[in-house]
Length: 320
Image (cartoon, rainbow, N blue to C red):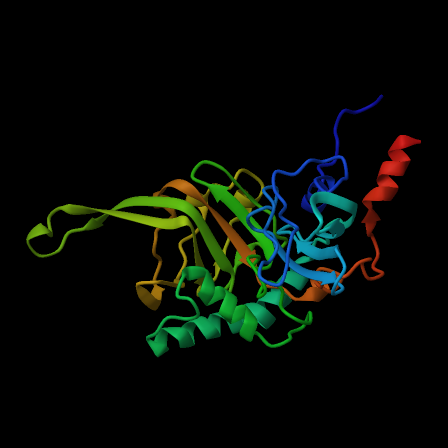
């Protein structure tokens, strides 16, 4: 008896399929020169992160773009594109490979929290005492700077300081649904929260002349993204982990964040997660490279690591 069930593809495999020579692209995103860096293509996920390098000899028109892309499910993709500057819409070759994600055990994630998350929380707390903006001043800059400052931990170099990824995706959800991915069933200090176009609305007791009434509070987080660092721990109840997990079912947390108008600030239990009206939340656990299983560097071919699948080999098998 056959089954129609198919194992979902990892993010890296889906990305690699877009690199197939038969795929048409809507831009010359891989193009670079001494004044211009390559751009992320339209099929690049918002929470993926990459490192790229370009190579070309003076006086020659052939150039190479090579990159490694790390995805929030910890799958990874490598690719190399050869192209000709004299015919900018012509790619001479496209090569790609991917490795499915390695799913960390609970103790791995707890060790990562103690090693990397603790350092992020300490950095954030110290930043609240400096009374000035960190980095460019946006909310992500606080986390990015913290990851850059993290010393090598139990799993080697911290992942995520070089672009937009913040580690291993523990959770993602919205007002009505969500999913907990992590084997560690607790949000811990140093975990990274990223809101997308989130809107909150809740009542608070009035003060002074308004003491007998409640006052409606409105809060918007994310244009489209807003990032914060968790400063408290919150274990999840077992019933939540075995079912749909909307944001409103998660416990409130103490957070530190910043905005371009305000330096890092500590928020106690705010915003109340049960007050989410729209938008979404992702929670990441800072991790080290050992939990990915290979270095994150822009090389081709990939370094010899277990589980790497070359897309060209898959295509040849499908044709036989």
